[in-house]
Length: 206
Image (cartoon, rainbow, N blue to C red; front, side):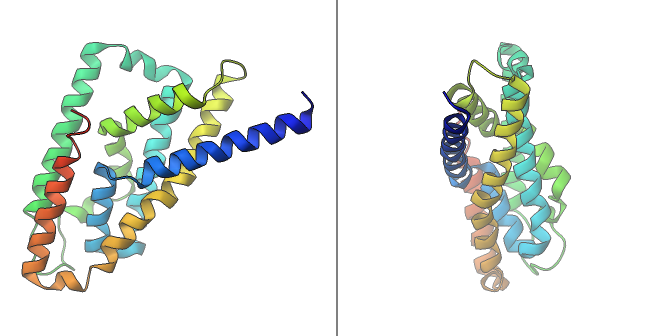
């Protein structure tokens, strides 16, 4: 195969992976529900660190799994059970905090304002969906030939860019509701709905 054909094939594979990563990112999940909450409470600009933390955190999980280090965790039943239990517990706790968050003034500090880059980044390490998606990607898109490090790095970088685009609509949709949420009754119902949605997102993982 000529170099031109190899480059063309690689571009097509990366394009297909980008589309897959975008779909995986834009579909409902714990991180997207949280980003909607962040957007509603903080707006788009102040919510961007959480968006970047979500994308980079998941991208790094993908790199770890692709590079092989994740297999140590994923092949250990006890470690996997601990990850699943702690991750689900953390997400359910966030569900409760969102559902019971104060609604008297959406501009005041609440629990979602603490979700900046680092908390969102670290949350992905406890997010079972991030690990499940990463394992699926490695199985479908990593080749037996070639440098494992280069492949894992490339997939991680492409996934981060796709995740930013895929998760952004959730942040923006939350921000679009800010004025509506000045009504305490609507804000309370919104909190209940998002808290329940976040908790329900665990069903697919169970």
